[in-house]
Length: 435
View 1 (cartoon, rainbow, N blue to C red):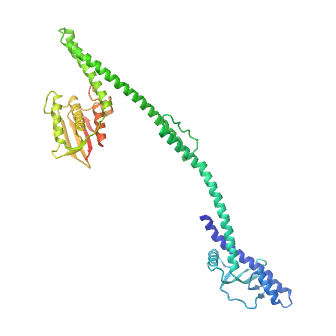
View 2 (cartoon, rainbow, N blue to C red; view 1 turned 45 degrees about the vertical axis):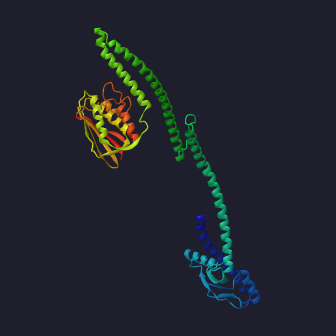
């Protein structure tokens, strides 16, 4: 419609010019009636009829030989505006048409142009503007009607085109999304229609994503079933191994050299198997557990670690050094944070560290805790599988659950744990908690 309006304005100006030229052509024919009389004069009654036929108040025909034929009414009106179509350009024609519509046709015009009937002859006509304005309004009404019909047909066509090319395909896309969301296990994967446009690309990517998610769901179901089975087996195996451990303790008292030689290795193997079962059950059942968040000073918690770590390291009281500021407080679950620091400290001591240093400071809206040791560092396999359950053990016989549980607990708090460094001079872990 905007384009139609932009076209309508110059077309109205052109129609007004053509209408005036048509009137001047008829005025030329009416003025030729004067040549049929001996003295180029007609009766007042005939002049009135000729002017009424043309729709003019007066006509002047300027010939090439500088003669003129004049046909006018007894009392010519006062002219309000003169328009010479011979020199008029488009802006002037548009301005004249706009003035014609604004003034409501009350003016008397004097119009000049070369006669469309004969070259070299200039026709001058005096006419009322009201018929011109009425003709322009009828023309504009016809153009607007045609434009509205054209726009309506174009809109209907565009609507059905959009329905067929866009909406129908987008509805198919969204229905597939919703069906897959509600029941991903049984929903059919979208079959792309093969279009090369953006919707076709979205269909192909959605189908690929659905296949990926469905594969992940199936794998997750298998892992859940496997985890349940492993948990049951570990539980039963722990009970069996506990019985075997009791029987082994009884066998250890037998005074047989061969039995005494193999019993320590047998008991150690049984203890490792029991620890593996207990660790597996603890990881699968507990995870991070339910958090009891509260504010507490960190230094007393670290001090509680000293005897626990020392007991696990041949009673050496100097293995854990507390460098936490006395006034530093954290907002966390105290028991769970104790569990994290204990896992890291024990891992360091059991890996061969002689000293574990725990320090902390306030960072950018976070509390940063560092756990450093002077051990031999992590093995390459441990660094490659860090934080992966049952794969990131840093010592022989370990299960690799300590770091996995520590990360799970810290992330449940909104924090995290990262490896700062690991080498021959020791290992450093960075822990972060929201302040």
